Amino acid sequence: MGEGDQAIHQRTLAGLAKGLAAGEFSSRELTEALLERIAKHQATLNAFITVTADQALDQADRADQARASGNGGPLNGLPIVHKDLFCTRGVLTTCGSRILDNFVSPYDAAVVERLAAAGAIMLGKTNMDEFAMGSSNETSFFGPVANPWDTKLSPGGSSGGSAAAVAARIVPAATGTDTGGSIRQPAALTGTTGIKPTYGRVSRFGMVAFASSLDQAGVITRSAEDAAMLLGVMAGHDVRDSTSVDHPVPDYVAGLGKSVKGLRIGIVRQHFDEGLDSQCAASVKDALKSLEDAGAELVDVDLPNIGLSVPTYYVVAPAECSSNLSRFDGVRFGHRAEKPEDLLDLYSRSRGEGFGAEVKRRVMTGTYVLSAGYYDAYYLKAQKVRQLISQDFRNAFENVDVIAGPTAPTTAFAIGEKTDDPITMYLNDIYTIGANLAGLPGISVPCGLADGLPVGLQMVGPHFAEEALLACAYQYQQLTDWHQRAPGGFL
Ligand code: GLN
Image 1 (cartoon, rainbow, N blue to C red):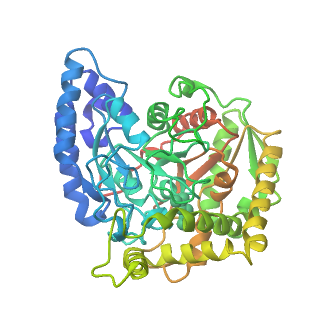
Image 2: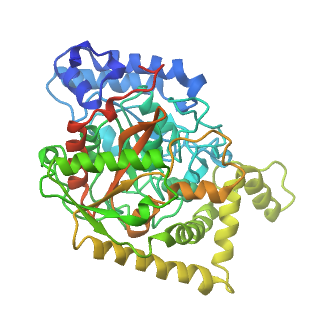
């Protein structure tokens, strides 16, 4: 089917850009069509916390005027939605939490600002696990998000609303953040493409912090091409984020044509252990075979300490979150308890009422591992193991260009299935967390269906290898059509 036959909502970002350029529809028409789609599916999916319809239509009119006068940025008139932890000026920014359920940000996050400056139109803010802590979107104060492939199932998390909205063809693209897997895992569970760039590639300014040494912004799209279009705009140095890196941003779209011939793809044996569902393993192996048939070389690599990544993460991330979340005290912004007796009562009741169970669990764990008596035994040890894991990746990348394997151990699971067992929930990120600990870029692309549910292939590269990852993902998407499969009922 040619692009011209496709309904607006079925098109990718690249397809919409062509339609706008050819005058098939205006940005206003496009925006209206997608706002209707958001409204139609909100009750079923709960993918949105806020819809910014009026603002979006204003932006769309401005984009149409810019186009008419021969102006407009590279994303002029294209719609996008933001995970609700990116600050948006004048718009509610909740982070999926009751403690911020009345917080209207006075400024835009760098990511929001850059995408808007390029002409992108924000349609709304997506649902997410509270403060991005979770793998199922069930910790959100605003309720769980449903997976469009089967609405009894979770879309994964924490960028669950972004992933569900893109998978359901409600919007072509969404931002997300990934601290331990929150872009890649929901992308895998919803059949979408998700990229987490190198730590420092995209500014964290205005992104509500969870674990500052691990958090990184990225995107969830329907194709590697769309991800390349957005990342090129989002990436780059920002003096307002001291960890943002001053490193040239390549033209990711221009780089997509690079063939996988001669690409050395590392395979980690431990990634195919018994923890991986057998049907997921089969899909991932098929994907690797297609890349091999296209000229890539598969090479075994060893990451001896990768098995320690989940326990290491669950010391480092809670430690950082216990510090970051201390700013939510009921005084400066967000939820404040009624009629406090004194200052301590104000703090403890505002936080007690404002935070959900998972956030409290992390703040308590983090405070414990940082406490005087336990710092050396837990936090310091975790930092040392983190270095070992980074070194394992550095060693592996002496022999291979990328490392590929499964994104998640299973396909989407039922809402409610893992909520009573945090450890089982934490294991969802067993294949993704290593890249965050080492600050490496990673991408997940759809590579099959198991019992009708999407499976993700993850590729991780050395620092600043986004261009290679996107090219490899793009080449794979030229060979296969898994990324074009849509959940029934959302065509
Ligand atoms: N699921 C992981 C956690 O709960 C990762 C979340 C994320 O990447 N934001 O911490």
